[in-house]
Length: 326
Image (cartoon, rainbow, N blue to C red):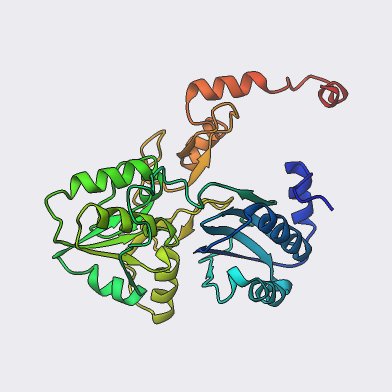
């Protein structure tokens, strides 16, 4: 058995279309000692592949970080597998808020130095000295207060389409940029009550430890992240303080939380919060585009990319056998 995917994108899409069952998307992470990440990775790939699971998982000495989906008929088998692996027993799992399309096309498990690429040197701070974990309801109540600072610990393209009301959203493209910006912007508020949040909670683990290292005394973090918060709020029938879309790192690129559209099309400026990648592959930029501009530019992010994309397409009069041969 091969412990990696060997199919092309078209084959993967055809395989999914042929399925007669639904898939459930989930995520989880845990900081836990993994003595041999390579061996752990191979064992996990073998077991998940047998169940037909798809997704993207990072394994490191410090733990595991997973975004994936499971065939609905195999959910019980998946849960049994999790409990059979010591490092994954009693794992808190966060299920997706909506399933409008399949989240992943293939299974990819990689060994990494860290489960989140944070760019931080853990020799200079105690990564285990994290902030207080808040339940979704605790975060909901505290975030409504005017004497607290709510901080979005995600990248700018994530907070652009959805965020908590009154949250500080640093204009950062990487996690390392963001933690530095937060420390600088809050330099005069080290005794302020700070509430951190991110998608699933994993980035807040490092961010809260970094803030505590820099002298912030009252650091709190949303346990389970936005996913856990929205799930709990919806269960209780309460109005969400998180508005817009929750950006996700899979084929869906977003989960609708509230009807609010807080972003704008990067091409024309009209209200829109649909992320996509530029269709011209050498660019492949992640951007927001409305349906009208998408049609005009064939899904490209700009006129130059559109011209490049069009120039690479086969001429309509080119015989099909020549297109296939190329």
